[in-house]
Length: 287
Image (cartoon, rainbow, N blue to C red; front, side):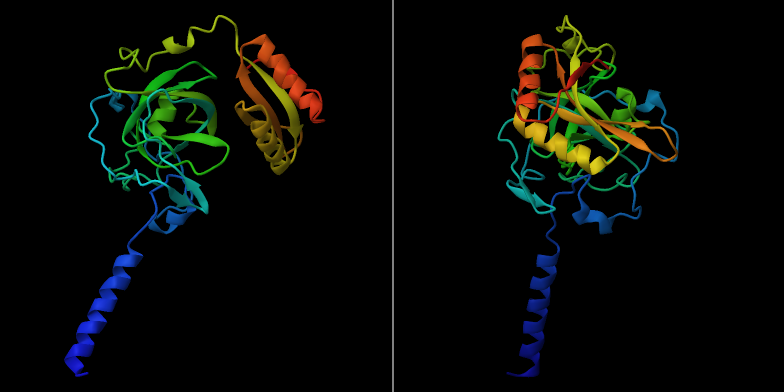
């Protein structure tokens, strides 16, 4: 083999290696696999104050959906996820978190540029782009978001919102909030006008106040997480951890709660499940 042939083969092999190394998993707002592409190691709120008048409302519009960001199944941090074939009829309740300056200006999973000053969201399973109504169950504020990213890749969270979305929902000054997510198919949405006003019209159907079962309180966060995982699998209900400042410096109390639960019969059913499993006697609280 002459020297010119060797050069050609080397160039071909080099191109193949380069092509393989360029393949990456979804952007994933909370995935560790992409940590090296960001200049900020820890996410944070914007260094420039948010101007509420510049946050645009999201209006659902016809979708031109491609395979960008919709590859299924996909794997992040060793866990496999499947993208839903359709978002129609999808609802879930659980914890929402937000992401901000670390990801600002970077590409989302479908190639759009993330703007923390505008309303958007990341979800592990909803097809992207898609639209959803997110209601903060702690204050009844409601907005419509455009889902264009993948995440959050944490078992206890169901959706990651842009900082602006969290700001409008009233939990930007805290890490998480209990929310209800309901998909919106353009042309089939029930409520479009004043989507970001409060209280949320979609929640007014509840004539009784939402209640929660507190199943335990721990100084150790990992103990609270273990109980919440077990309760989530056992009851099929949303389970979350509410952390508060306890007595003493740098001490927190992590309370494990189930809900919201409106129906009294369901409240008794879940209580009986917990007692029957030998996990103590939960008590009812309202937030």
